[in-house]
Image (cartoon, rainbow, N blue to C red; front, side, top):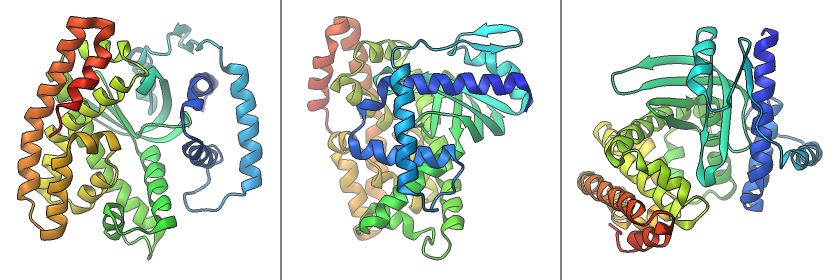
Length: 347
């Protein structure tokens, strides 16, 4: 790795640390400690499933928190490449240089307008008329909580290493309690009791397809809701309305792409995993989907699920469009109205 690329990676990691310094306090203590342990694994290249010394992790967390404390008010650093200082969000310009070298850079804003950054090696690239897909492998710079995939404009980034670690967190959490639930049904398809590493690879490969399908749905949903959607999210950032709006768009994306494809191929493992990870907000909004899933589990009949997904596609597009209309009419005062809209828009 040459000096210029090493310096770029250091700067991206520095910006990741600044973002974490500002937002790490938003997580519950349990989530924070779990994420910090996995972040330690990533930083020290420790395989999933290998035990880590609690004392060693604790000392590292203390050093990381001390570093974050110094960075909480720091400004994001420009990225230096090819003799030019680039804004950290000039993703396309930076990738023009990086992609031919086998690397990719991604940046954006997630929930609560938290900035995220990653630089990773590329495993594959694909382009269609509707989107560009980049599959990322080994990550050289990342944050504490890293999304396994994201769509920026019409480019989809899928972070295989991050997805693999996220899946392991879910599996490990289930193994502590071993409840008979959707996660148990998903795990049962992969044979974790026989060979953990091989089972995790199979699960990662299968769920990566589901992740890609969701992000394709996000691209389509973006076309349907229009450009004002992102402006609306900025206005309602850090409110309950933001969480609800993101949940509605997730449901729309899944009804457009991921769920129809999983149902068509009868990908049982991914279907179980999808319902195992339904957030409380999405479950409350879409109780008919949960009922249709239960009917499939009890009776093996996919018909109710297929019908409910078709209904959901039209329903959630309508709710998303109404949210945008509320924003365009009321501006910054739309948050409470969006909350009220969701309350009466269950399906």
